[in-house]
Structures are given as structure tokens and as C-alpha cells.
Image 1 (cartoon, rainbow, N blue to C red):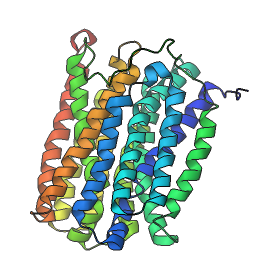
Image 2: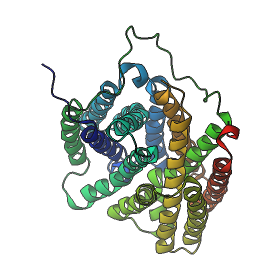
Image 3: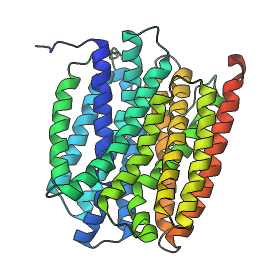
Length: 404
């Protein structure tokens, strides 16, 4: 017997909440890494490897499965993503040694890779049905805020578990396991927006190609997504290390709150500034990234933690708008029937930006003082993000016929 479906508007918010919670779980371990490190005695290189396993899982699953909801259906693929996250929670609980942590993070990354493009496409389609006259930028803003808002909440939740609750290396995984099972039940009530293809087409991995008629704007947007996630990767994977080494601030809740402030600014900016024109948002993105990253560098150089955090908030605001603009561009340029595939490619590029620079930073930290690494990284991503925002803003000013 089939469960009754809710309306498309209600389904939109169920998917958005699920998106938020699964993304949050993916960053819950960020402030817990020092506890794992203290328990098992591994080095910061191992933390980098654990983070890399997550990033590799995201990229691999985006390539192999990020597009399959275009012909399997959105709801079915979302349900799989949530259950894979539940599997990762079980692995964290049952296999607590370093190999288990690495594999659990990889599995969690697989879930995120399946989830991101599928949930973004599903939200766009649910909102279009519920409110057909509404600007598409609203759905893109909610999707981007759920994505980055979840990444923001995760470290804060993990920090609170570590600071105030017992057994912080088990309890968060137990709580999220229950949450995921409840979310899976609610997803069964959400309307499907894609009719499953019958017969199913022959499977092939994600096609690494851009919309044929709009290569230039897509590539500019991809550059923006890569640059934005490079900034976020710094605060996701290595913030606790920098707080301890540069600011002598080992507090686990502070580590979570610092990351939360950066991602929270990104999510809040996407929602609060959604009504502004795209070119205005990109101007704010350039200013936020430029000023914010300059303050991050200054705060590390002085050193002054308050300046570092304020800079992170400014940079977070900028990269949130930059990433949202990249998603909106990808959705607008997607060919009919290939929205999921186009978004999957955009997310694949974005998560490459999350993984590659962070891994390089982790390697350099073994040979170079943390402050020097941070200053060099901040300078590179400042140039990249400001350039990306400026180029995307210039492209948005061109007539539609000239954008391809």
C-alpha cells in the first residue's frame, strides 16, 4: 500500500530539512578530530587523510552517481543517500580504529556526492510546481543555504557534543542514525518530480562535459564554485589545527563555533540577499572575499583571534553568494532532462576545490609553520575568489545571446 504524498510545497521543505541534516552530519567530526587524535595518538597528517577520504568519497560518487536521478527519479536516489549516511553512522559506532574512521568518512562522502545534485534538482522542481510564477533564484537560495547551512551546523553540533555531553565519540552518531531513519520515512511522502525511465538507459558515469551552447558562462561559474569551496575547505578540515597552533585555543566548542560562523555567514547571505540582482550579489561576493580573507591573514599574522573570526565571517558571506550564483547559473544553463547531470558536474568541481587545496595545506603543514601556510593559502584564494566573482559579474552583464 502506497503512502499518501504531501503537497509539493510541503515536500519542498521536507527535502530542504533532509538536505540540511545530512550535510550537517558530514561536518560533525570536525571539532572531534582532536579527541580521536588524543585517543589514538595519530598525527595531523592522519587527520588530513581522514578528511581526504571524505572528499574522495564525494567526488567519486558525484562522478559515478550524481546524475542518475535524472532517470531513476529524485526521491528514490535521495532515499539511498540518506540510508548511506545512516550506514556511515553505524560504521563510526562499530569500527572505532583509524581504518574504520577513514572508511566511515569515505562512505559519508559517498552519501554527500549522491545527495547534493539530486536534492538541489528536486528542490528546484518541487518549488517550480508549488509556485510556478516565483523566480528560480529562491529555490537556488534555499538549496544553497541547506547545503552550506548544514556544513555550518555540523561543527557547532559536534563541538557542543564534545564540550557538554557524555561520550562525544559515540553519542552524535547514535543521534544522527535515528534522525536519518526518521528522514527516510518522511521522504517517502514527498512527490516525485521525475518519471523513472522505462526501460532504464544503459548506465555510464557522469559525462564530464558542459552545456554545449553555454561553455563560457558554465566554466566561469565552475571556477567560482571551485574557488568558493577552497575557502570553505580551510575551515572544515584544518580550523582546529590552526586554532591550537596559531592562537593557542584548544577549546573544542570554539573550533566548532569558528567553522559555524564562516559557513553560517555563507548560508545567511544566500537567504537574506536573495532578492538582490545577480550582479549586485557578485559585487558583494568580491568585496566580502577580498576584505574577509585579508582580515583572516591579518588575524593570523598579529595574531588576533577576533580579527581572524571576523575575516572568516566576511569571507563566508562572499563565498556563499559566489557558490549560490554558480548553482543558479548551472541550473539556468542545463539542457532539458540533464539538470541533475549538470548540477552533479558543478558539485564535482566544487568539491574538488574543497579537497585539493586542503590536502596540499595538510602536506605543507608538515614542513612549514602554520602561519606561513595560512598566509600563502589566504593570498591564493583571495585572488581566485575575487577574480571569479568579477568574471561572473562581467558575464552576467552581457546580453543573453552573447553569453554562450
